[in-house]
Amino acid sequence: MKEVSENKIGTGKGIKNQETKDQWPEVEKVFTAFVEREGYRKTPERYLILKEIYESGGHFDVDELHMRIRQKGKKISRATLYNTLELLMACRLVLRHQFEEGATQYEPAYGNRQHHHAVCVKCGKIIEFCDPRVGDLDKALEEVFNFRVTHRSLVVYGECDSH
Ligand SMILES: [Zn+2]
Ligand SMILES: [Zn+2]
Image (cartoon, rainbow, N blue to C red; front, side, top):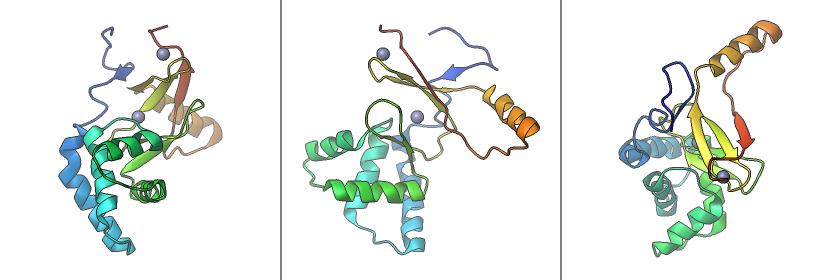
């Protein structure tokens, strides 16, 4: 990995404020407050799924998550998984991405600084990056189209360095 200067593209460290597994106590509180406020039931399955997502960190698809939970000897139906992921997205603890190739991907989102994705079309590797220059794009959109950017999802496709 080449050195990058302050104002240029960055990767890995710095994108996440802290390890997602260290966020668990906070995340648990956020989720409990959400289900109590919205009147959902506090089922152990929902907490188990959320905990698994934050313990492992990173991107995952539903099949991977299902397998990881089963490997730990727990049984959770796919319907419960989907239903819980919807709840977790509603309280912004999980983000969903639909990349061009492959299954829908999710990732933990608590305290996650806004970042973008570069997806390898050959092996599916995902590089997360942030770049302050994307802010210039927001400014340009506002100036030219009077468009106010609230958030964004930037995905770049290509080939990674293992090909
Ligand atoms: Zn690749
Ligand atoms: Zn990501």
